[in-house]
Length: 201
Image (tube, rainbow, N blue to C red; front, side, top):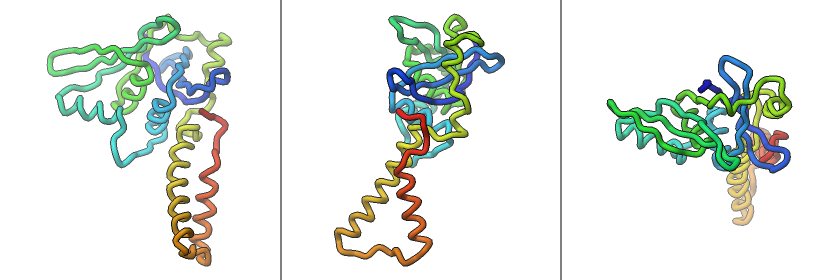
């Protein structure tokens, strides 16, 4: 097993499915894993340091583990079956070790939240210099560039504010457009509704 880190989140050109990119901590081997849209959002929020007022599913699981006196010691992407990667959670509870089967996307999302190591079976890694390894490279890390999942979160908040403004208009209230600061805020709101990245889901 080799330790990996998440270097980015992108989109598979063929299937239009979100992809998590992993790279060896002390080397150049890489791996890309297809994930669902909700898991991509969960991973993206952590990579971008976003805080939500209420816990998502992965947050809730870690809260439950802590309440039960357990912690996530690490995660493993340990095999492949029928074209799907297999993963496991390694839990520590007092003097007992527990290993649980899980999806790789959930393993990555939990490891990022718990700041736990991510290990990958060496036979699954893509050696540097191969065409597959180059295809698995996302370029700049996600934390330095917005992605589709971050766009979704920004747009949801912008739409909520836009709905509020629409409600004001429907009730016959005037918008305070005479205030330059408020007008600038409305213009910024409209810009948020437009995607800012080429990495779409």
